[in-house]
Image (tube, rainbow, N blue to C red; front, side, top):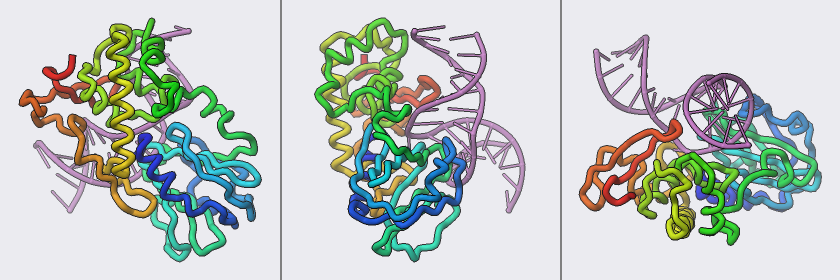
Amino acid sequence: MPELPEVETTCRGIQSIIGCTLEHVIVRQKQLRWPVSQEIPSLKNIRILEVARRAKYILIYTTKGAFIIHLGMSGRLCVISNKLAPEKHDHLDFILNNGTLLRYTDPRRFGAVLWTKDEPLNFSLLAKLGPEPLSDAFNGQYLLQRAQNKKTTIKQLIMDQNIVVGIGNIYANEALFTANILPIRQSNTLTLAECKKLVLKIQTILKQAILQGGTTLRDFLSADGKPGYFSQKLFVYGREDEKCLCGTPLNSIRVGQRATVYCPSCQK
DNA sequence: ATAATAACCTGAGGGC
DNA sequence: TGCCCTCAGGTTATTA
């Protein structure tokens, strides 16, 4: 489900938990990407102070520490009535004091629910992440510098969370299309002008997707159960058997084991 | 040190 | 209907 716009949508959708007291957490399945932190089942009556996003991680700050949550490929968070019975893949419930609970669902279990008493931004998984794509730190000069001396393709570079965070397979395909750059270009062949354009297109596409509530391909639903509408605006992703707007049939290849679609005419 | 690729899971969809 | 194969918004661990 989740690239930056979907995680941001989820984050905004669960803001109602701020100020609530977390009475306790029910863990039904602790076997996720990493085991659910051992301390979590014994947490009792702590106040939720803030909900924030860093990269594709959702951070829930409390008076005693912070939860670090990643949605993996198929994870979901939603705030619902505490009377709704859990289903097969509902792995954790965060029981709140106002009759609701925050439920974590994840069929493929590639996500993670971790706990730290310290500042979560210093947590090992978060410490070495690249800049946020919508921040000033992510600009053409920066991307050009990071693209030097690298043999990887430009698509793999922008999906590398140590270079820039938040971009996954959908938005990498879309941004490269709108920037007119071939996904398989070796990153060190990009000019400054191309880097600037790519940064701008990445930012534009992410902002648009956030406004639309993210992209729903199969099963993404925001915290209030609504789908995202950005899939209506995808130019190349998932359109491998169709033609580009210019009339040229789109090409479909694999780059770093990920489905990659591009227009051989519009992208150079 | 850097770059490919294998691995972690479940479910959906297509072909036979 | 069922079985087998491939694929899926991600990221780390292992190998070359």
